[in-house]
Length: 123
Image (cartoon, rainbow, N blue to C red; front, side, top):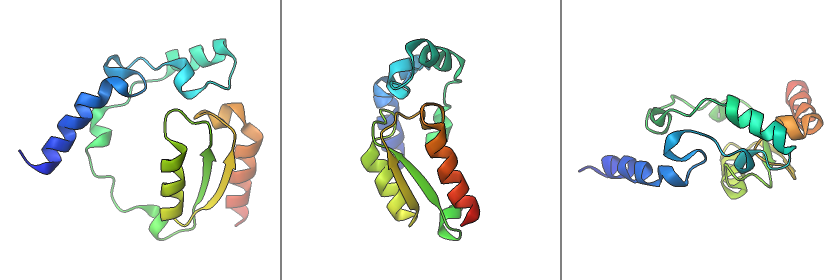
């Protein structure tokens, strides 16, 4: 078995620990814990499950290598660890803003997200 094949199998084995686990049903507390429970539950129910192929297929050339980037780090993200977000932002040399938010920052902190987008648009 190749290293890549072992890695893919390892990801499959870890699927139960990912948001939604193997059944694909997201946990509303996992990614939107700073929203009202009813709103988080509605968002979780409406979210489509992620396809496993998204973890294994190449994405192509990353845009951040050739254009300026902005990154919002959600310090209370339970979906993507904030340390991983910081590493991705640093790799992209991104203009970075950190806020105390869950993964659903665009819903729980729309003004902070809007400000970041406006900063990016005006350069």
